[in-house]
Image (cartoon, rainbow, N blue to C red; front, side, top):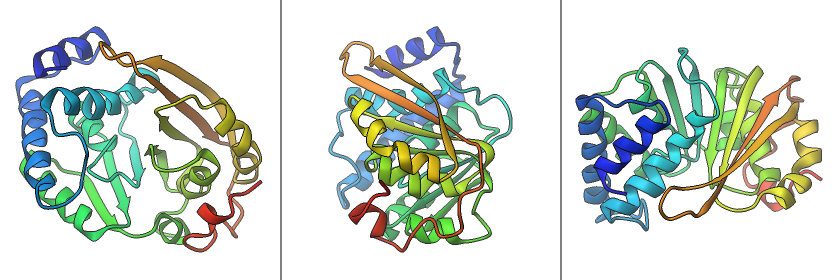
Length: 238
């Protein structure tokens, strides 16, 4: 997907980019490729791959959730900024908080934010488990996102504690999700969530499958979750 097709495909979905936003995506691509030479941010560096499998893929969340209001997003394990920074470019009014466990990725994100000239973004170097215990952030976000970070049973424990009551946890997955969701059913309920819906679709042109899982935060997460760093991944809630 070249930049021109990227713009056209988004317009078909009701997202019209202006010249500044188009330029921001161009800056994003070149900053990503430049930094990727000195640290491992992505295996994809071809322009067509980045625009389709990172930029467009990230924005698909907006095809199923209304980002027109001034929501505050927490992006868990965002790596090189996906999905929250492409969403921020498309919807400049949203507030974005990114938490990632690697300091060098946080350094990249800080430089990226400067290059893109974007405001109301904050980046935190922390394990998600520790971040979710912090009263400054716990149950404070309208939307919590995670893209291809871990299994749903693990992701739910990392993300649901950060979502406020009636907020939404949006998990973006690359493959079929039925089995993952079945395994995560108990965890989602214990952590205060309830499955809203699952949107499964294919990316344009390449037609690889994607799923967006949307979970509403119905109840307060019990205080003993998330557990200590590393525990959710080793022993997921069953």
